[in-house]
Image (cartoon, rainbow, N blue to C red; front, side, top):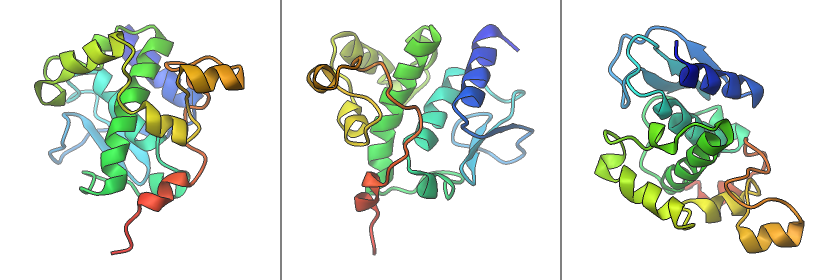
Length: 174
């Protein structure tokens, strides 16, 4: 295992985000990664990009526990998971910064449907895709809100796991 992988795994352990290191026989959306019952399953033999672990972990981390525990396989196309995608992008960037990992490890050339450089460019300019939802979930804050709360702004995270149910309003009853 390499240093980046080990740091990511240590981080997931530290924030209590469940994961399992085990072989995956089925095809997965991202090579070597799958969500199962709120945990991340990592096949180290098939994993191509260790930064993908942070992005997939962000999907889980940004959901309230009751939703997180139900997350398995590919995510359905729904309001909550579209919002969760934006949150996972911001969360994984903040995690890379926190871990002192080059964000390019997460936002690599083979990911984000060719848009990784645009995402990083926005972040480098201080335009943080997904931050409004992280703020709404009380996980991180923009400059103004952080100043009012006397805390550090994004990419600093107030908490790494969503612990409120504000996102429940996105869950469709249909």
